[in-house]
Length: 107
Image: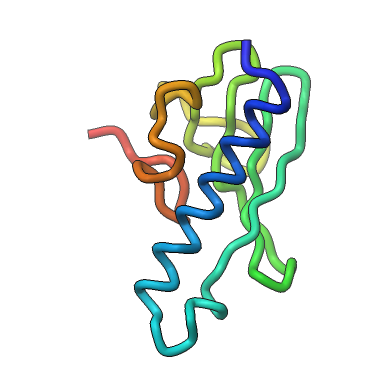
């Protein structure tokens, strides 16, 4: 079972990795305009990860984490995840397999 602390740590590391990537992609602005802030909304079964602009405006679902298993799921929409795990927070490389767009598509 993934604890809230595990999920918070994972999301923090993913946010750092994503923003480091964006700074490299947009060096003239230090990536500021493209940076993302990730927030977490805990539900009974899933933790919804929401991506906001650096100033906190806007928002879209980055992905979901299954609280029971720690599986990382792509969003099927605002309120539910897509089937099939894209990884697990315990074995993930803390964001290196994910970009600011969220969990990878299945191949």
